[in-house]
Image (cartoon, helix red, strand yellow):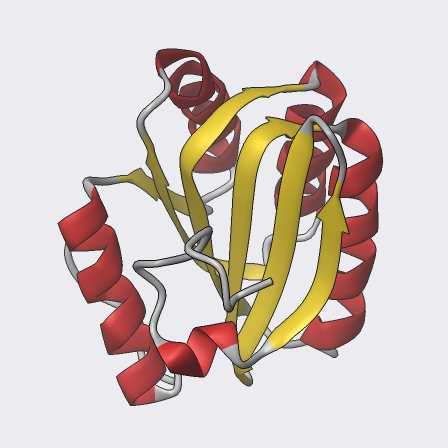
Length: 156
């Protein structure tokens, strides 16, 4: 899939680390694990609850008890199942050791509202969630990849 332009802004180290893919007429979902503590989730179109559930199972298996830097490339995500947002929020807030930081980029107002709802819940338990512009998101991803995500990615 990464031979196509779907994930154009992602560096090759990310594109070469695909561990999960779903492509239907409504959604394209791909999960990348380029470093020990770094996970990138790309979604185009709709994000279904069934895909969210499958992605979380893969992330949990990959995590092996580590705290992760999560990067969500959702610039062309247009909608989502409410259950998908709930699954991610519940997963991140039920065990705060799972997430070191979460970085989102999205252009859809609907998706941004969902990120805001999740951010409110996550902030209550101390999980760092940021919705940022694509250039800032790319900078934070580059830092996480360069540092192997051993140090906290600073800035917002």
